[in-house]
Length: 619
Image (cartoon, rainbow, N blue to C red; front, side):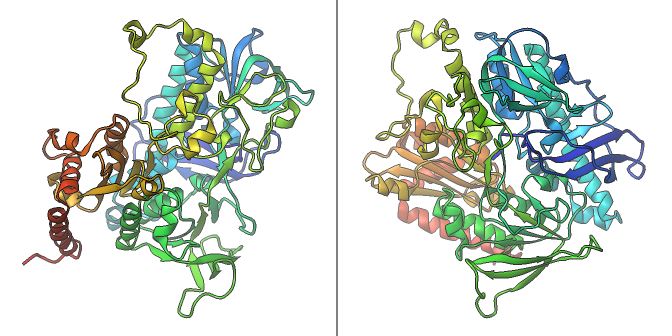
């Protein structure tokens, strides 16, 4: 979900000053929640919350952004709209060899939910995915013990300052490195609000903060404005007590209790984040069986069950088969709890004994995302979009613009709303635009006359998305990309599940390894599992599914096993370094050839782990 800086104007402005002590340090964050119309600028908010800046940050970097009226009077080969990871990576690719194009990157950080340093004009979120804040918050929760800080007498505000400062540092490091790369590559970076001109064609109007308009023309245009959270009707979003998955970035205090609606990746991630930060968390899902809800987004049944078990073990409450009927938000006391009235899925009374009212400090709706294209004036350029705002393209990622020179990549195309796939689409779009440049590059394989690719996975018509990464093939291709859930523990998968194999007529087997069966897992992180799905007819590994620490890292080795058509025997013949999680690959392969023995070993390890989790000394 992370390929953009959205145009839903939830603005965060940061004013940093270094001081010597925690008590005197402050970081001013200005919050506003307004809607943008046609990328028009808005006046700043007057709500200020004092926080602090860590003294180990380097001096603020003067950013190379220019206002629209200072756009050089020279022809540009490419204009990129949107400076998230998709837009930035595409701009850099086009500016570098072998393309070496004149590129201009246009972004509106003040209308993107971004972090701004007002003293330097520094956009702290340039090049960062939507999930950068949540990932930083997750890792900060691992490093900072909230209970310990509170035990030392620190107030909640001081604890939250420490958490936010850590997140800001991560964002700042990423932003400064992005600017360095753009400057080195010679990309012109403009801050302004972009939309296609009303007159038609492919000209862009760039609106500055003072409402002056500059016209920009380029031979090619790439739209990479990302996505915004889907906001269901009836939810009173205010960016103060009721949030979506973007506006939650502007949260100004550490809540004691959080209610989250959603059962997908983002909802699970934030549930664990806030629980790890010491909040009481309630997850409200419409499905009566939480595991089924996770399986709908592609997770293997056992991985889904492991995540649900971890939610329960963490103390996260799950209200099943429920939805919020009504919100009662105190208007005079912003710290008094919100009261939610719950009803059954689809309406009606909940079963006898089920919770019907719920109190919380904040409410978060994490129920999906939609393409961020509403304010681009696409119709004027002849660009067609679906009912959700997703831009329609051909296999070369070219949109239907009347000029034939507009392309799109990332979340603006719709699912899967991942930064990794969006960046791959951006690269594919650049290759499509400037194919003649790549034709002059001779690869080592071409020099050797190698026209085959034995490492490519092929199952029927799957794995045929190719370098184009067109959205239709991408969304239906389980071999196109790995999927990661950045919860704690992490979950990730690549390739086919047993159910998918069955649907394709493949007789599949499974080899499972528990984290507690390898030494590193047993000692440091025993909760979790790794599963290999394989074709029983030849032992070929068809999918890898993991839930546990470092799952989003471990999956890439599994991806290579699938893509290279490796077998269970291949994994058994490999030697893995001791005291690593990779040992689980060999344990899972052993389980595939000795199912009965593996079940006994897992039962024994499971009993020992259950005893350990309960805090009971084994006999």
